[in-house]
Each structure stands twice: as C-alpha cells, then as structure tokens.
Image 1: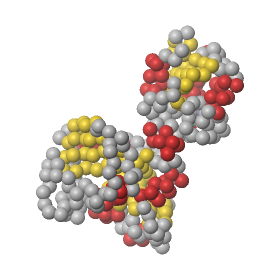
Image 2: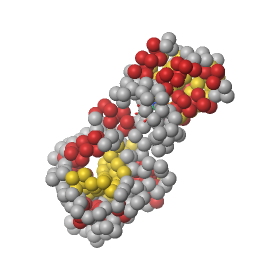
Image 3: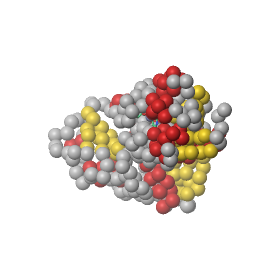
Image 4: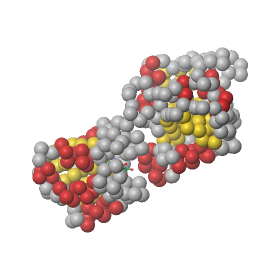
Length: 347
Ligand code: AOF
Ligand code: ZN
C-alpha cells in the first residue's frame, strides 16, 4: 500500500536537488517496518541518481533487503552517466518500489518498471508528478521547451521611461524573485532592443550555479552586437540567434545560430533540438508580442510597480498587436515589497 507521507518526504528531498540541469529533480526514501532508513536525492547533473544516493545513506547495504523504496520518478533502465538504478535495486534486494510517475524520457519510459517486475519486485505507480519537473515533463510531452513570458511594467502598462536606457520599475523583493525565476530556466532570451538598451547580464546573482541558464539574444546581425555587451562576458554561456554568420572573432562561450528568418517557432524548435526544456522570454515588448502571436506562451509572470510613467509613445508591455488570444488560468497574486507579482499558466 502506498503511504503518502513517504512520498512527501521523497518530494521534499527531490526539491533539494540544485543544478540538476536537464535532468529531473528526483527524491528517494527507503522504508522498512514503518521506519525511514534513508533519504536520498539527485544532487546535481552527472552525480548519482536519487535511488543510489538513498542506498548510500544506509548504514549497511543489507538493510535494503526486503525494504520498500519510495521514489518520485521511475528508476532508470539505461547506462548513462551512471549504471541503471532499476538494476541496482534488484541487486540489493529491495522488494517493493512505489513510484511517483513514469519517466517520460523515452530512453527509460516503462523499461525501468519492466526490469523491476521481471525480478519479482512489487511495483506501484502513483501516476503523479507531485509538482516536480514541470519543464522536464512538458518537454517530453510536447517536444519543445516550456515557454514563460516575464516582464515588469508600471500601472499604466509601460515598461520603460523612454530615455533609451534601462528603467528600474520594481524594488528589491521583486528583483530577487525575478532572479529566482531565472534560476529555474535553462535559457533566457531577449530581443535586439533590450540587448542594446538594457544591456542585461541575464545572470542569476542570488545563488551560485554550476549550470547557470544559457543567455540568448535574437539579433539581425551578430557582427553588430556591441563587443562591450554584458552578454559577451564569460559569466555564462551565450547563444545568439542571428540572420547572418559572424565574421568577427567571438568569445568561446558564445554560440551563433544562423537563419535568414528567425521566428519564435524556429527558435523554440532549435532549442528543442538542443535538448532545452525551459525558455524564459524576458523582453522586450516586440519579442514578447511575437511569442504571443505565434501562440507560444505557456506561462506568464508579470511584475507590476505602483507607479504611472505617463508620457506619450513610451514603450508599452506589448509592442505589436498580438494576433492570438491566449486564455490563462486564475493567476496567483503575490505582493513583493511595494510591487505585485501576477503569475499564471495557460488554461
Ligand atoms: C533516476 N533517478 O535521480 C534521475 C533519473 O544523464 P544520466 O545518465 O544521469 O541520465 C539522465 C536520465 O536519467 C534522465 O533523463 C532521466 O530519464 C533519468 N533521471 N532517473 O532513476 C534519478 N535523475
Ligand atoms: Zn537512475
């Protein structure tokens, strides 16, 4: 019988995984005679999987004999960076495995369960992601990254004070929150105007990351990118989507993708080919409108600052008439210092 409290423990452990990069966050708990013997999780991309980490927490590997493992994701069946977890569970004598969700990754999907069952292990699958690995699951379900639109605006819908330089609208708490949002993304994209006017760093400064998000920009010509742009510094990898190839030397952390006509759909599919599961579109308004028009918005996070910028012709949150309508779920509204965050997902 599945006991939810052990799953909750496994989910909490999974969430401790940082820098799992394109791998899922996974937690595992070993239980015997109503006692929790070990709790493990996937700490970081390339490190042990959660099941192995849990086995390593046991005082003695013989304790695994006849024990039940609760694991948030189906144990893997493939030889990747580490040998298959399902095989290891059969070797150490685990007798029951309670699984949160099947692994949507086709290299594993169903095969892990099959290995366990073939060895007489009793397997139950809850069939729930328990809120974990939203982008990972989305990627395997839809074959493309989960796209989140993020922007900050004034009460009158303006995103910039119009002096051809960056306007900070929100205060510290909202800025920190936006950093947290960044830290959960694999790629952060901006358009040409934002690149030249804001000169963003697109880095995560609230925590140190082994695999920081890749910074990306859509430009007409990579040769025209200001060599002083923060995006060309070495703090994280940078991908540039350009209509023309580079004729100048670029730093080694910069990759250029060339196509005569980049559309949101072409960018998203290029990212999918690169195995990218989550994309944050940070601005500016034209780029965001293009994603809406292409019907490529899965989530939206908007920060609203309690000010009106007034003015005529100031850049507004959406720069172009977006030709599609997208219905979103009832948003979650949070106050962050003096600012408001509205966050929602596609209905
Ligand atoms: C598990 N437990 O904790 C994780 C799993 O690159 P590798 O070799 O580490 O394999 C990555 C794949 O393994 C990943 O896409 C997913 O299918 C599975 N991740 N599986 O049993 C874990 N992180
Ligand atoms: Zn594994």
